[in-house]
Image 1: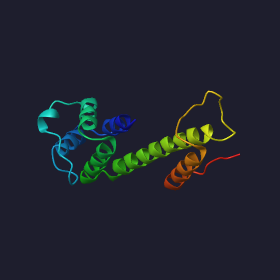
Image 2: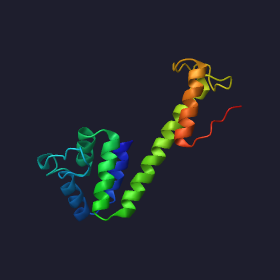
Image 3: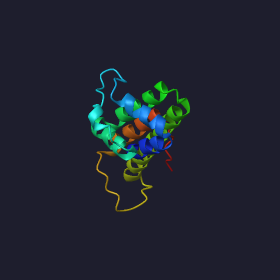
Image 4: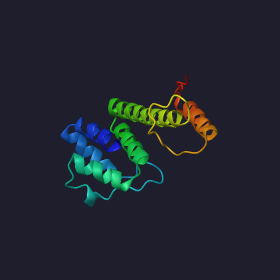
Length: 142
């Protein structure tokens, strides 16, 4: 999913801005994060650039690097849009995990074939609470 967010962002850039984005990728953008060597980006189109980013960095770092580059390019709109979409994606993933956790350890399980093994019901409740607090998601217990 991160690769799709990055690709959508790069597809919104014009050719000159895309070239500038790639130019920044071989520079140090974040402390402790190695730049991608210029030789791996020279002939890369948008999809290959995204592939190289996700091969070089873990997903969160790839997103942070992309946002930092967009800010350096003074493309605040794209940086904000990417940040917002990434946050929405993370909230959706947490919601799904919360749903699965609650589904498997409450009497309101949606399906009898639900067999997610995450420990005891009490442990699930603690995880659900932690997820809720960290993601501002209210559980829907019935």
